[in-house]
Amino acid sequence: MKFLGIDFGGRRVGIAVGDLKLKVAVPVTILKNDAALFSEIAEICAQKKIDKIVVGLPLSVRSKENLQSETARNFGKKLAEEIEIPVEFFDERFSSRETAQRLKFFGEKKLKMKKDATAAAVFLQTFLEKFK
Image (cartoon, rainbow, N blue to C red):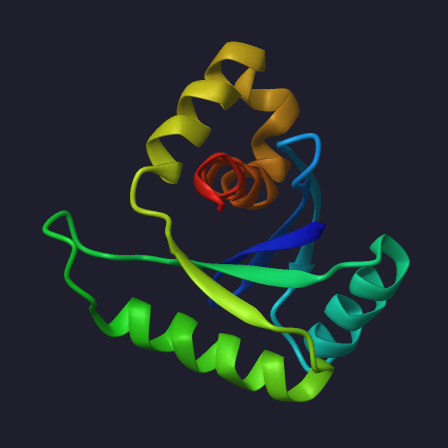
């Protein structure tokens, strides 16, 4: 089973792909959040043969939903309708911290442009490890 991880943002959308069999998630690309977004995601899903999409859900430190969570949920619901692939939401609270650590480890200047895609891979990796 293949998953597409999405780190949704107002300007940029990080994309990662994960494979349940291998339990590995990797960053793929960063897309602009513009009118072409849904068609670009649909194209990636078709190319990668994606079975399910996992949208990162930004929660507060106390696990509470907020305005960003609502925006991500609305995006995910519309995406599911547009491209007809099941969408699930997953807590992405600590992906930013781990992403920063990874970027620092690998040399921030090299990977700074991949920040959003790396964040998507981080929470998708956790999702795959917990998937039943």
